[in-house]
Length: 617
Image (cartoon, rainbow, N blue to C red; front, side, top):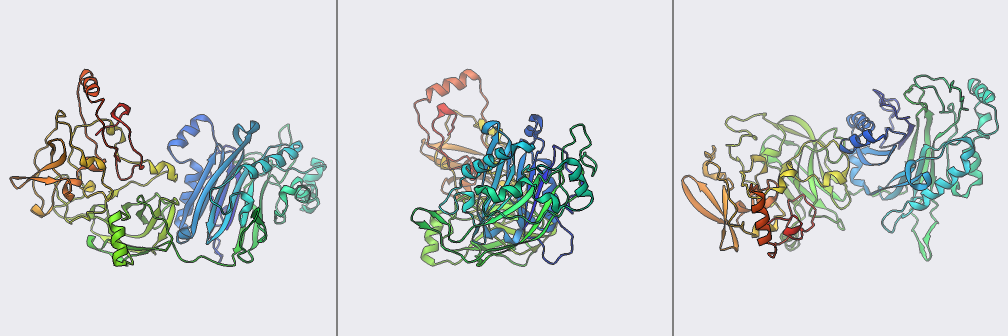
């Protein structure tokens, strides 16, 4: 595990951070995980607004640098200028579970987040580990304030679950950041002389953190390697020269990395004791600063640890089986098996990733994992050992490349299973057919229980943001009544159909009939959703389909009817009318109730209340 801390002083990221992360070192023991703690990232209001829409530049830099080395962003948390990022090799992702984050403000009496701590905690191969990045108060005389703030962070940060609810309840804690401890008593001239003469040991005993480790109970058990590198603060920006300004601040080791191993005998509370899992050992292989980075008045510090657990949970929650190569669309079959006790959700999905993907939402396409009630009954009756889904031809990338499949668990907000890299070799274009051709027809029968969507690469690693990315045109959801023909990428049936498919459209809503399309090269085999739908005596929903000059009605229970975009909620309807008409009809229908519905398979399982609150049938 590599841990990095850096107070970047609101600077822009440098062009290369390869040496800081100890990549391309040629060492046999490559890192499995990397935790990066940043402080004083530019958090002015205009910068924060931009970062709210797009990933901040520092996070983008580290993802860009680490993804070619097969590192994936596991979790990230930000509190104003304090950021923590945790990366891991992609093949470790299924064994990183129970991921949670927290943050504590201590600036301005707890109301401002310029100071405080952010944390990411997770289970690594069944062992609880916490990464804590802190920015504590500055200045020599604020040592007691630093102790109080650290104690506040430890007290305030609580995690869900019975196991390791507090930071110090974890099997292993990494504490790092700009801790702002200074060198006491010694004159600045002697400090600089000791640095220039490389007699740093004479400064150690006057370091406030070294003194506090032996006197503060809150720091009991925390360990740190020897400070064999020069103090990392304060430098003139752009140089390796200590502060030459009028203030002439004394050099100090403000940027530190410590760790603490929990004693196996520590109880969880009255009458409860956590079972011992054996001896956990941590060895620090490297502890150094990086003088080559001059964008800030702090130098970054890195440490590499070898962590050995006594036991290892080596069975992934979900095992995925796939062919070595997909050279034809019909080979895009995915079989998967879930371990006993795995809590799956109807919002779980399987993502197709390029080798070198940056975070779990950086997929090429995805398919919903099948989890409807009927399937569960069938699984129990037939004792099915593996479930199966299939990617549609439109969802598959064209050309040649290496890809990985990952099962994303909505419950744990993490990847619960991955495959080894496999090849996809599909022709880039086919004669007479194109995935984006609006007049073409699907060349393959689609799986009635699976909805396949193409999605652009997410630029944001935040799972919370991506969960609410429901529609390509979310603003259209306000307009009801325009019936649109779905594009080829939206064909297929939702495995979680919207309840609104049971509700007929009001008769007074005008519909726009689009011209009939010519059948594709497979003729009647490819079925297009109809152009208009009527209400049959206000009770059941029917769809009119034009097919080779004949007209036939299809029940809502038919897969073809369920494929209507209105049922999926992906292409909402549009109604244009005068304001007086709209208000009049709203008043007329004020007493009519409508059933709750889901806007789309990716919308939260919430329920709209009534037309008065903006809902629509």
